[in-house]
Amino acid sequence: MATVELKVKMRNEVGKGKAKKLRAGGLIPAILYGEGEESRPLVVSYKDFHPVLHTAARENVILDLKIEGAEQEDIKAIIREIQYHPVKRDILHVDFQHISMTKEITVNVPIEVVGEPVGVKTKGGILETILREVEVECLPANIPDKIVVDVSELDVGDSLQVSDLRIENARIIEDPESTVVTVVAPTVVEEKPVEVEAEAEVEEEKPAEGAEKPEEAEAPETESEK
Image (cartoon, rainbow, N blue to C red; front, side, top):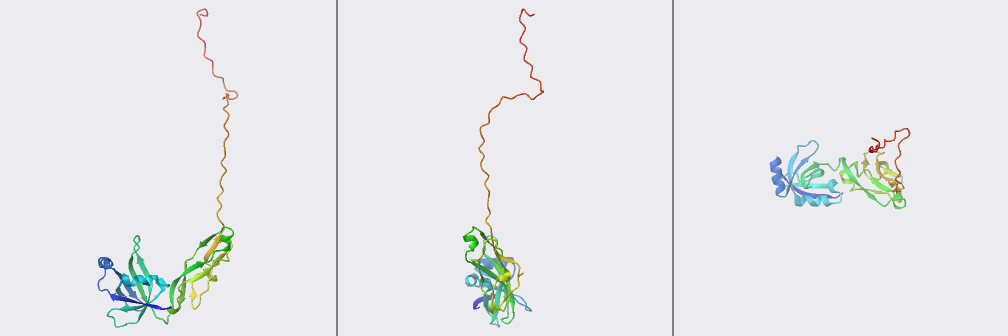
């Protein structure tokens, strides 16, 4: 994997207020740490850092950090974490990890799904992606940009597990039985038939059997009956 040169500077002032001021000026607060090393606060220009995220490797790109004023010129590092604003999605902070090109590291590698499953094409199935990345252990130079998964042969009910993934010069350390993708049957929604109710015939209400009939109103007495 090719390395990308990135210029950074030492950051002497820390704190939320200082970090906010840096971001307002087009700079990103950062930190560099490594095994057995003391962490060093840095600052990197957003203009210089933004193109790094558009490389094929994205977060897994190997960086050749050039720290302004530092005696050690050749510092290899990877991006370990990027913090984003929850709403604006602006970059708030970057963690760099100092690495050795001769020691294995653990990184997350994205999975790229290609092809249209036969179960989707001919039977209306639905392709569900369960895992979008897997954890991989390898030397920094062997970090793959991505793992390509061809799902063209999957029928309804078929799936691919982590154990089906193929990668060179690296070890996948996820659970081999974990499902990566699966094709499920389409969901059939049964529509209830609309019942057309016939007009109900209006029947004369009849008193229940055994019920007393309402008494008829007595006619007023005539003069002759008095």
